[in-house]
Amino acid sequence: MAGTSASKSKILSFFKYDVFLCFHGKDTREGFTSYLHDALRHSGIKAFMDVQLPKGRPLNDLIEMIPKSRFTVVVFSENFASSEWCLDELARIVECKDNMGLEVLPVFYKVEPSELTDQLKGRTVEYLAEHGKRHGEKVQRWRRALKVFGRLEGLPYKHGIESQLVEDIIGTIHEKLNWKNRVRRRASEALHYYGQWARS
Image (cartoon, rainbow, N blue to C red; front, side, top):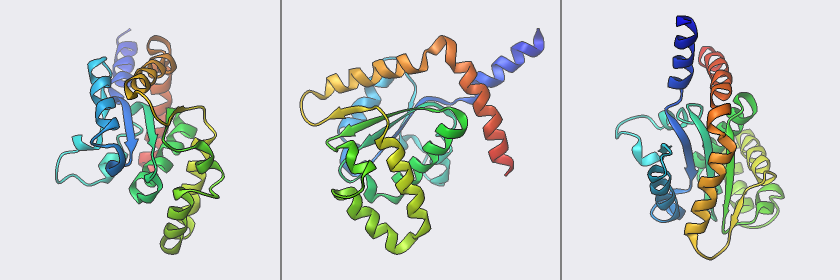
């Protein structure tokens, strides 16, 4: 009995956050994403935003918040693919999704999902072409991650009242996480995979 309690405690303490927010800073940090972060907090959901990373800490510490979160919301905006850091985060999220069962939700904020999947037009293809001049093979990993998310069912936003989009995001998070039944299963998978990753 004591062993079972200890195991449950270990699983639940593995996660530091309920939600990890991935977004392009200049596009949405001072607007939509900050509003979303505040709304999540007020609804009782512990969300991680990059401003919470203590000054002086390496940026790699930011990426390691991804596997320690139960859920990830990715806000795709016009200039998302311009940021190598955003693309690195996205690739890590896909890795955790595939190996740990990380729940994800794409938000297409004034962009079309086809821009991510087709990569034939729009700012995304322009940015990827620029990255390709410097990074070569790494860009293929980023392209794959973008395509994965472009094919997922997400929440689109072109114009209108942003508060409704925020409400939809919060409702989707609660529905997908299904707090009572799925958190421990997801945590068990996460502990197993993260232990393997840390030793590699």
